[in-house]
Every structure is written in C-alpha cells, then in structure tokens.
Image: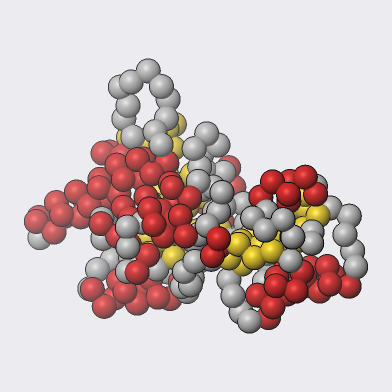
Length: 251
C-alpha cells in the first residue's frame, strides 16, 4: 500500500501533475484506453521518458485508494530528485574523491530507504536510481531513510548503462556487487568509486554488469547464497570506507 500523499488518481489530476512539473515515479493506465485525455497523458509521459504500465481494471482497483481512478493512477515522488552535477559538487566541496551508489532495479521501498541511509552514514556523496522498473522516492522510502534524504542527493536517470559510461569518462571506477566476483578485500576500491547494487534475486542486470570495471563479492560462510540488498550495500560500502581510511593513514 502506498502512502496517500504519494498517489494521484484520475485523468485530470494526473494531467495537472505532469503540467505542474511534479515528479511522477510510475504511471498505470488501464489497458485498451485511447481517448483524448489518455493520449494527452501518454504524450506527457513520453516527454518525461517515463514508462507506462498498461494493466487490467482489476489491478487498478486493487491499488486504488479512492475507488475513482478513471483508468489512471500515478505514483508521485515524495522528495525532489537531484542532478548528477550535484553529487560531484558535494564531493568537490568536501575535498573528497566521489563515492556514489548506483542501484539497479531496486523495487522494495524499504531496501531503497535503508540504502540511502547507509549511503549517508558511510560518506557517499549521492545515489543514482533508474527511472523505470524501480521504486522511486515514496513516503515509505523517506521514512525508512531516517532523514538521510535531506542530506544525500538522489539522481534518477533513464539509462543506468549510459550513466556508468558518463561516470567512467569523469574518472570514476565502477564496482559491481555480485556473488561470482573477486572477493572485495582483494580489490582496490579507493579513489573515485561507484558501487552498483542489484535487486534481490535477480541481482545486477547483465548489461549493467558488463559496463563495470570490477565485479566484487562478499565472502559468505552460511548455507544460503545471497544477502538482502540493503545489507550487501552496507557491507560493501564499509569496505570502501575501510580502504579509504587505510589509504589516508598511509600518506
């Protein structure tokens, strides 16, 4: 269930949300609708490069909180998104090498909120998430982040692979968390670094993984084969913190 302030239902309400510049995270339209208002909504979504989920009336009825969705429901961001330049500006102001989280298709708002909190606590300068197929900045995410969203910029991009290419052009090394990679203790994770965390179960997508410089794994001793995404993010983040501290002490 979404929080009330994160949901807009009805055609006029969704059109006005687009035209007022509000950030829409996800858009659901009843499959088969094609009248004038629906075409307007589709055009506005295309301008924003926002994917539309075409679903059944039954699905809309399930997620509706008003019972009057008119075939359209939008999830609205509870916080404003930032631009990539803001992350680099924060790092420069602090006199630090950029440290960035990249999240690939994280759909659980509790995981996203926890990772943003970890990013803030570990000294990361920002978080990057995809525009589609992932949870956005809902009220639940804000609550779980425990205030970290007030200090840690979150950038939403259309294509994670292209964003990784841009980061690499700017001197950032990219490490992907994957259980089949090199043990993280054996990798040099100092300097300008971006840490890619994938969704539970599916992990980091193949195309994104291919763009990364390192594939880093967390050593495990238990009987199951994976960690919760937010836990994995925390373990990896603090290995980066440890290596940075060790490097600073060696100078």
